[in-house]
Length: 149
Image (cartoon, rainbow, N blue to C red):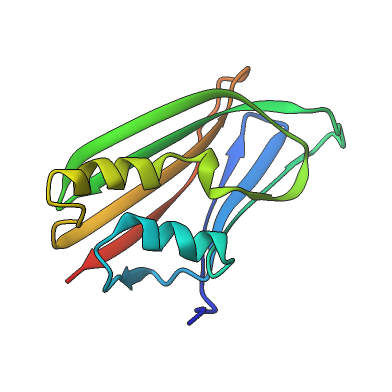
């Protein structure tokens, strides 16, 4: 079932860039009956959820901008994993981000490995951030909330 909701957080970067990071098909809090992270990956692969990144340069410049991609996973208020990747190139405009660009599926799988491949019940917050690498700026981010019964 594809939900028609979209989470978005907007931020202005420095004086020249602005952007949003949306996750299409994600409700504010999504309850996930399957406790296996691979089923979440499958939903992204099958386009039930899509990560949309849009940014623009107010000067109209269309050059490539390098971003740092950061992922943080929190379970019941405690950080259980994070990762960061540097120098991902993006062009201004609207672009879908492959789920593999962020590391939340491997981070969730690592947590599940300690519980026979299943996620522990509770609330998971998945924070996705993109920050221009060469600028002193606030990251563009969104947080997905996943409830495992």
